Amino acid sequence: MASSTTGEKKILTLKGGDNEEFILEESLVLQSELLKNMVKEERVSSIPLPSIKSKTLVKIIEYLKKHAELTPSNKEEFKNFEKEFVNVVLEELLDITVAVNYLKINGLLEFCCQAVADRIKDKSVEAVRKIFRIESDFTPEEESEFRKETPEAFEGDLDDTTN
Amino acid sequence: MEDSSLTDPTLPTELITEILSRLPVKTLVRFRSVSKSWLALVSSPEFVKTHLSVSANNKDYTHHRLVLTAGGNIFSSREIDYFLRDCSLSSLRNDSVTEAFRLNYPMNKPHKSVTVVGSVNGLICLAIDDIDLFLWNPSVRRYKNLPHPRPTVYHFGWFKYGFGYDESNDDYKIVGIFRNHDNERLHHVEIKIYSLKSNSWRSKSDIPDEMRFFETGKFVNGKLHWAGELHWPNNWAFHKNWNIISIDLADEKWGKVEQPRYVEVDFCLELGVLGSDLSMIWKYSVSHADVWVMREYGVKESWTKMYTVKYPSYVYSSFIDPTLCMSNKGEILLVPGSTLMVRNPDYELIRYPKIVNFHSCVAADVYVESLVVPYYRTNQAHNKN
Image (cartoon, rainbow over all chains, first blue to last red; front, side, top):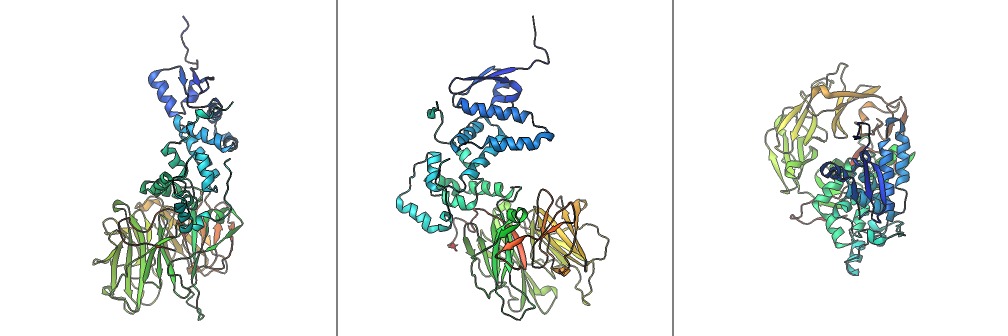
């Protein structure tokens, strides 16, 4: 009977929210604290991730592969890859960030949060509400009070777009 | 096809905190009005702390600014205009031109002298005409006018202060040293300590021998530091007897910090803070100064000579100030006289960043933009500027 040799790589299947399956080497997913614990404790070979869109999962797997190949000599190339990685519409970036937070991929989480922060830094209050799907629970009087109290924070060209 | 039902519309609070803690103060002040839950989050003491720590540890100094003090030329007979301006530290380091902005500080009057005593956690301690003290956060434009220290040597005195944070008691403290001008005898020195929590000054009776000729205290590792002279130079000769005196803001006990060994003829020593380390600039008479840093607090052997700085030809040596900051590439920012200078470690290349809207300064201090307010929730009225 054929037994697994030391050189053989363990294979794992990730199932995205729309039931698409991704087959990859187990060593890659160890960068995720969540998946690492699942693989180590429960010895599973298939992990369903119903809350993560396949499109998002594709991006994250792409990152895991690039990150695994990171060496001191291709640092610059990796930095450029990271920049391109977050260069997507804001809604998609938020999906990725939420997924990365859920999967607990720590280095990438910090990078994504910084990218989101950089993107919303100059946004208007109205735009931020739309982006994060928040309903205002302030009265119009309370809202104008904020503007009166701290006019400097509302000065300048604020960005009303949500992307 | 995109299925938006797959996305949970509300992000977990810890993720919102992670994102918001990376935003500049101005943006956060605006985003307080997004919703009641965002207002509560941004105003919570935990968030203020998290945001401060993310901003303070940013390696690119994105959230650091430089406050420049102008005025105070004692050699000029003209009336002097005092004012403060500030500019972005990362811009000074990276851009060829940086813009300075006029700061509207408390008790802002052109003919009253203004001194930046120090800055901790985004709070700046200001002394106006040496005796009116303020704790002020320029980023959120909040300040508190502190009670008068009422030293007994009030007239013709020489007042120096140090400002720091007592982490164990979550309290901000100011140490005031009040010295009589015309008599250097010890009993004419008075020391008082202010605590923001109690909002009052207390006298401190034990005074170290070296308390004679002090600059502003430098805050490192929970302690304030001064370079103290052991013997008063009665013939005004320069000599070697310096000590570094510290006071621990938690237990308010005095201590000493050992200095590096040095060999050359001494001239003048000044303490500074580089990052979170105590630094020292050792000035030689005409040509250069050595910058030392204590890499590991309290360990004499960890004093490292970082640089020898050659003075620009027009700068008189005693006007060069300690290094303000150092980038991760090793570039340092110095204030020789009335200009700023960036020194590259690789070669003797010195850059003088151009600052629009600013001509000269007598002092420069680094502060971090924070949401920390200069009062406790329970105590007294506060002010907005």
